[in-house]
Length: 414
Image 1 (cartoon, helix red, strand yellow):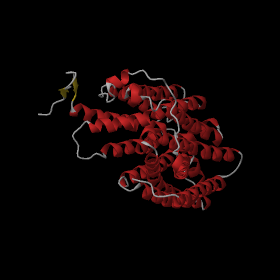
Image 2: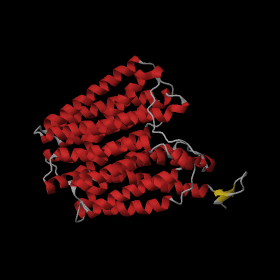
Image 3: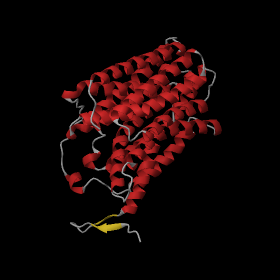
Image 4: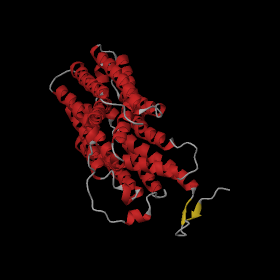
């Protein structure tokens, strides 16, 4: 018979057993996926906001850019706090913050509220991502399992897979239910509230004595290994380029598809889902590949995909645009995994979180800045047939620079 609790050998207190940790693992994974999915709910809705309010494309990309800025700010100010405050104390308020954003959009779905809600969502996601990832690893480590890599695979699926599911689900709801600017957010409001309550029951994995320590607060720093700055810079540039691809499909894919003759929420949501799904799948399949090989394969696939999607916009071919996006998404998954593994391998043990932070900072700059530039140029009258291929060319140049930098440096340890 499986027990659900045991007595701590030192304190004598009852501690959670494997069953509670397994259930907690599933709850945290569900909360992680839902939080990430909520972040991409607006992807298929951007065109509806534009049509209803007569908004220029730049407003859409500003709303998207403030989300990326919120994530970056939160990663550096809050993301590391769960290491000593406890996982629950950070994750539950972050889910509640997303629920507030959802409530705002249910009550008043206008563009000003959308921008505010996107800032709140970004702040929440920046706290959820590192906290849920660490909690999943710790919960899995407390259960009898013969698959030590399960937590990393589940975290990847919840992160990138959740981003894809959010846009797909929102597109489906828009196509089948009324009041499309309210219904998707109402659904996620319910899910987020339920999961925030459920996560409160998950066993805490940060030791009580660690949580009781009083530590002076400091913002997460970016640490660049002095003796490996060339390779570290290559990883950061790779992160900038790959997030630029994700930013394009998170913010502007519906608008681009509309110019290619496939307007509507469903095509936009399905396309974003396909790109993020390809990224998640490639990370899962390539989990045992050496970081150097992940980087090289990611560079090849991402470059090929960006080239194809840029050609698709020039040729007004939705098949090439979407197919190139999926191919680039597969490359993005491998490239992100390789970039993060490289940063961790280059950094000393005490600075790995700080090295990773630098890669994510470059990434979220890449997510916001290029998409914003395309939005500004579109509002100035520049057609997507010009701006998207230019963006593709910039990404290709960045990836080429990454390839040169990697070739000029030595092989990183696994």
